[in-house]
Image (cartoon, rainbow, N blue to C red; front, side, top):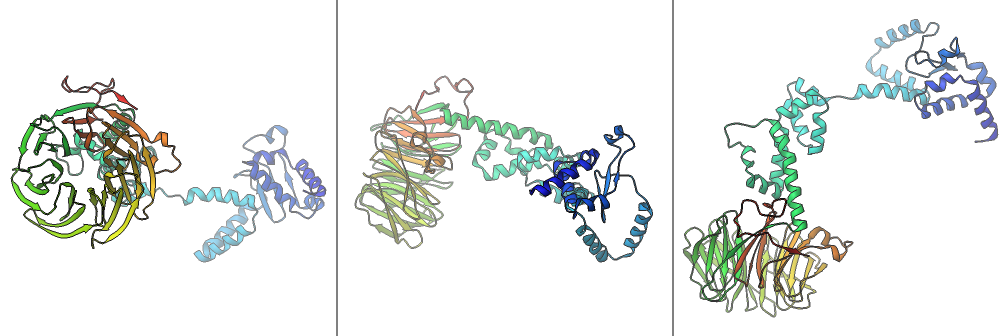
Length: 562
């Protein structure tokens, strides 16, 4: 600021009554008023155009009921919203309002715009404060008043839990809309539909029957779902903590193989576990009682791989055949004879099946029905046994003892690319979306981007061949010939900035032999081993002191090493 202007500013500040500055609601408003004063051509002009109306005594100057007003040429700047009228203001105001009311809406808007343009910034602030509450609309309250409750409920149904809690506190009408709209119930239903962890908890804790179309005669009130939500969050936090800290309940199935021991493959659901054994048999176990329900025989070699759905079990064996069994009766429905050596792995989905073999080939099959399965194409390119395959609608992915992963088009069966990086043969992989995770006899796990073929991360920690691997959205779980199962943080592994030392969350040590196969979900890991056992690692039903809840004494809590 120039010295001359600074002197004028000080002079003006001294000449303006203190009540003006006390009347301003903020420093910004005070500065705005000062700028209005500074905009006059000279201090003499200030004295000519400014009329100061001061209180009668000094004590009134500080009273909130009194207000100082000063005129600046063609305008009035007030220190507060209310002020005493001056001169003929009231009469002139009435005349202006009468004229204003006679104009059309367009003329009224044009006049107000012109009027506002002649005001200073300080006055604009007061007008803005006056208009802001007038422009706000409580549409959640207004919609039900017009019979549009469903729209108000639909709007609030998009809120998350924290926002829904806040919305309930706005007013009684908002609380009524949330309660009558059962919005806490709808929030929980949305989570169950989209998150497998929520879905699993709803089934295991049996509150799923109160969701969607109620399967109970009585419908719980909204308050039930409101109180249920934080309990679910607590359960989820407990499960996550159990995974991080390695707290679990262990159940053990002794397979008691007749001759050679070892469980090469398995798959499970909520009711059963189906396992393929080295002794050529397939055993079906009750998941609750752990009793053997059925034994399927027919293969003349070890059962190396299997997969089942609601209709059939498909198995591959070292006898070079693929057999299709009825999942309920155990009857053999079909036997496929194509490969020249052991069938090492297979996958089927949506009418397509892919098998791979020690004979270095991959067979692609069309499955019209369990009894109508025809060979579509044989894929050749690997230079050693093909140990594992996986596929979706876009790609077939295969891994081999030749140290490579090959990608093929699912629709055309044409070769796409090779992923190179492992230093020794590859024993296992899983493929989903763009991510491939593979395990190798070089003792490492690699993460790949299937579209560009880049290796995203190498995980080190196992001391022997990595035999089996699975991943979901949060974790990678691997099993190896060192008898250990490792749990890795998938999201951290995909972050190139994450230190390698932070990637392995837990190492689970319980098997006394090589780990051949594992599968896991949000609540458990189920693994099989050369030691002829199947282990169920339960991260849900664990008490606070680490002892299993409601389990027999033979099922013990397992020590976890890092």
